[in-house]
Amino acid sequence: MDERALIQRLKIGDEVAFREFFNHYYERVFFYAYRRVKMREVAEDITQETFLKFVHTLSSFELKEGYHLDTWIYAIERNTIRDWFRRNLGKEVLSLEEKFSNKFKPILEDPFETAENEEINEVVNKAVEQLNENYRDVIKMRFYEGKSIKEIASLLKKSEDNVKVIQFRALKRLREIIEGYINE
Image (cartoon, rainbow, N blue to C red; front, side, top):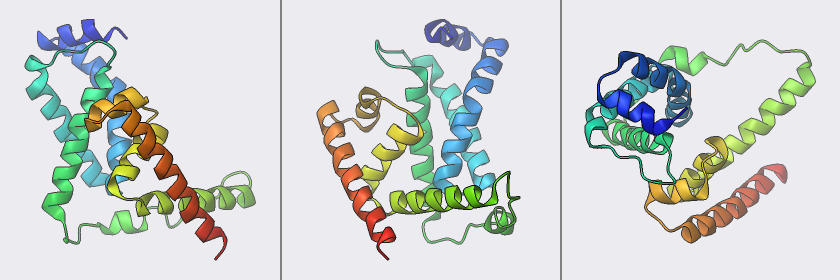
């Protein structure tokens, strides 16, 4: 996808371009929001708000050399998620559906392998959530979202070397947390 051409088409109000853009980015935006808030309805709201903010800021956006459109969208989404957490800090926001959504997952082909993979994922996700916010953000952007060091540095407004140091320390801390679970 030629991002510069797409941006120009979006700026002139090309509905086909917006549909292409929406279809291309919707799942990524939604699943990132869902991983952060762990509630489907809220993730859908955050996704919608992210796309609305995208449209409202489109006229002033210029794609810088070496950066991608998803970096901008992710920055909008990240701020939208932070705003949501600030507004809902201390509130009970889990829906009944979300609390029990994974309770009765069907066991796939190999029940032992499925159980083992779920247990590993649970331990890793639990460990990632125990990291401080800087470490957690870098780990999620780098390994969950597949962002480059350069993109992460731009989003966090840090130098690339600083992001590398944070990633190194985060991985070291993550290893310590996981080893703690294993040794329990």
